[in-house]
Length: 264
Image (cartoon, rainbow, N blue to C red):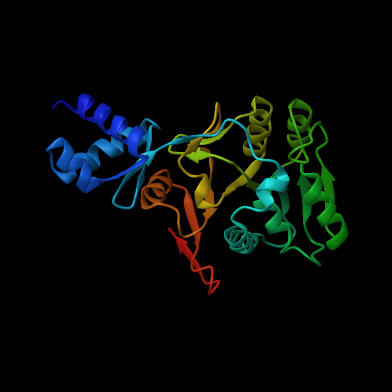
């Protein structure tokens, strides 16, 4: 069986089962596990599947981002550990961008009583917390208000972002894969690109559940990032991909022990 036909068969099996092991695929298609792993790698590069430990699953499409309230109830232990680890990347007197989202909000929670940072954000919840709990200089981008996510998006927000030179930007996402960060909202693309263009260090902060998801609009390729901060459940294929792009990977270790791991 030629590779293209075999890969089509893999997709068909995944459509019926959702997830299939490498051993099962090798048996069903009468090829070696090494051949199946090569096929999975090709399909993952195409954004059609996600390699998981011992097998593969279909990539998931995100049609609409969850609201701020919904996101605040998802993966809270992982987000807390990610926020703690990410906050350690901040040196004194930095100019910092905090993107919209509940994971970035966790970073803000570790800036209590700081007064040395200049912070810019498009997120109303993060801005309110920074204003109340820190003594940092604070700017909000303004722009078109997205009510469900309690943040600003669009060209006006992007123009405000481009006025700054950020030492470090924390970038959020609801979906990313081997092609990079994506979003279901075209109005968020300009914001993400303005952040990347205006920042010396560009740090994606995301829990592992977002990997293997994709949306309609590509916002940033992985190569535009300098760092990724995630949790220890990030699949090995994602870790390898990130490191191959020359991006520094920081992983939280055990949530229970709150230990930290940095993968280089």
